[in-house]
Image (cartoon, rainbow, N blue to C red):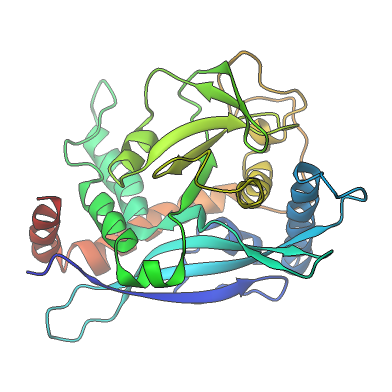
Length: 327
């Protein structure tokens, strides 16, 4: 049994003309935005929000707040776990790759891969495994091996020649903070990332990403209303330029303002001690149509799809490979 798996990468431009392919995870933020009669308007408004936020953060030598624009590509990583016999590639992971356009100089700067993170196996773990494990239990818990397979698959992808040939730096994944945790503001700050928040106990998502080899830090960017969770390897504050980090912030803060307006489009900012809540009533809606209930329902459906088409038929192979990879 080989330790490395065969990965391949597909890329598609995420713009006003984008339409989700049949293999695209329907629960991803960008696929959800790109459906329905208002799809083009949705996408146009989202890209405008991203550009405006980027220019607001990258304000130096940018007097009219129009120097930069952000292009986005959807990167799909597929995996083939066959050992000689043909097996159709399974769509394992989807991430976003920004490219920053400097409209003053005409230069293009590669942004940080990652940003949004979508995974069929993660859907399976959180939408199928976790509810089944906790059904009828008095207290919430996670299985001992929760996230082990997914973590090893992700680390294998990052170490693959395919990743290294396509991306210069490790990814940064940017997600919402957890509504089950309390965050405390610190005195530490960064020009682009903003003020740092900390909390004493990892959420289940934090622990899940830890098994992917990723650390987490929480920052509330300038003029934001809530901190974001940044998952990364290495040194978040020194491995990336301010413009690279701003590309990630502007992209993912926009998605969170659309998807979780109660937290990220609230009418007042987080204080010294902050516990996010989706029941918070003092917030504003964006002009973008987003079906959050559909997204939650599809996560369960796609978790079951992952089980039937990936976990179940290749369970023995995957378990043996994961145990070997971990050694």
